Image (cartoon, rainbow, N blue to C red; front, side, top):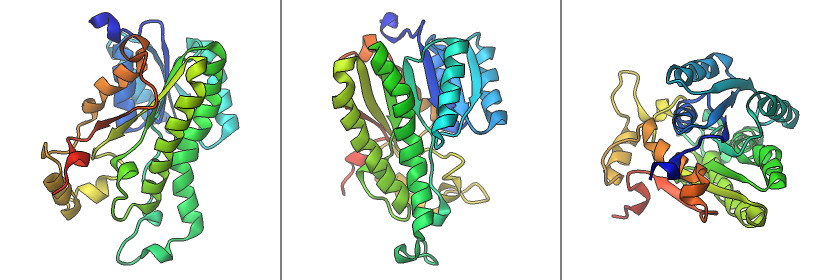
Length: 269
């Protein structure tokens, strides 16, 4: 059974590996044997993730890149290939909500500026999936092997209150995932997504946790709608990530979305 989830010999690129969730998935992939490229804009957080991976005796390096800049990703791709080998796994974990594109009492939907909408939408779709898939996925298709894991959101399935631009962008990520699954399956590349539930991280902490550490009204509503009655913890994502990354474990899986949400999307009344 352990052979099914052995990623020895694989090179995994985690874009957004400088964040809480991306960093934990990078550690999980490394723990399964992959050589990991932690990619992002924050070198300090990237180096911290790399140190945690090296502390368990695994291989990782940080590479700076802005996922919204094609030339930046291309340079990182070349550096990763030179240092670690040709990537065979891509995790797109960059993205997040932006308060400027969030509906509030002071900022109704009709008051959101188009530039603010576009910035948040592009962060989550263009930088969160489109350009990385074009840069790394196309190369995988040329080599005839690869697994791409896009990180969606429960907001992709149900347009959550307030986070309107984020919800729309994540819905587009799901659609793009299925499009690429169909396009690249004949060329040996599997494309799937993971839908996390509610996980406290840098970009959403103010929505979920008050300054004193107590849950916000939004969090209390979320917990009441989550059958498992808790928020997600970063390590909850590792199993799904390794499963989708492994061609032995999920070699006939493409175009799928794995929900890691404590049952949130299964709850009705």
